Image (cartoon, rainbow, N blue to C red):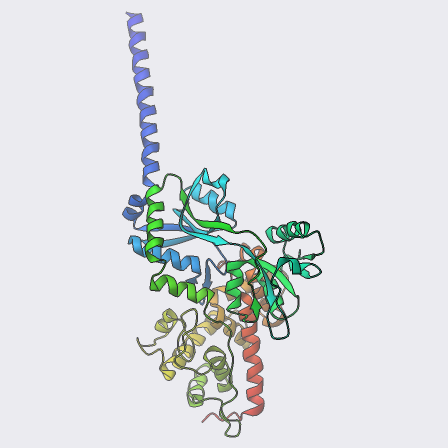
Length: 468
């Protein structure tokens, strides 16, 4: 009897263990299904995109999410009928790790196509061809280099990594003679080197063609036609098992690569000129800055500003052109982003109305002023307000935090907080624990504040302060 009970107990134990194993295995299978492919994404109503901060991928500008890869992600999500959620990674390897750990559904970034990664991920979307180019100035006085053999004897400044490695290899291929300068300063980025080429500080640098193309929209004197590397394929990617999602991305790109929205995004980042040529004062003899002086005088009182400062802001933003639309979508005399304009009370369809534009801008300045009350000095706060007008309040909060953390005075702009708006394009700083808003091309804001204040000084010298 005892033996029978032992046999029965053993049998029940085996059945129980088998049931537990089966349930566990079944649970894992269900979990895999829940987080996997296109059908589940549509059921959830959200697609989580993984990308990296950068001028060609994703950044926050004037409080709005922007970037070429971000806009394409938005278009793709819309085609699926789902909402977009964005998560950022700190490196390409981090992107892949996050994808494989199921922290996101798809990588929306120019991910290099390599044999090693093909074993674990599935490439999809546009098959992009990238390469490295020589960034050089082009003018009537400077003849651009047209062949890599002409690099012999030239001074080229590059960051460590792939650009330096490529030049070292190229130098060996040519038998030596290229003067390669390695820029180890962590506070200087590739885009900083491109800017230095544009302003003549250095003669040459090397960058990926998409980054170089974007920068030609800021600096039209750049020539980027000389390729210095072989082509490298790049694409979006999903996990290996997400075949449906990959097919959807392939289909979307094939059907939309020539669509108006796709073309508009391409033009916005890689073709639309972001350099501005400014006109002279309207009439020095009559003491007029613009046709809108009366509006500046009327509304500057509400924020206790000199009307000429408000005029200088408008001059920098729009050249006093009420019809202009910026590359980022800002509109009208004061160049407010659509969402900001609406929040500040501008009626729909009134973006080109100069008074409504000035009124909304003054409302925004007033709101930012209240948000920056931690800066006690009124004059100093004005500089921060101008910076926030250009960059968005989030980036200004970041630079205040960075300045305070690294030994500068976060309540002073010149030579203090402004130093860190420049560093917001550097990964070491925009990934710092005190930063909340990621990458930003800070040189624009740095120059924006200085340009407005310089022009304001000219206005004060030449235009009487007549308020009515």
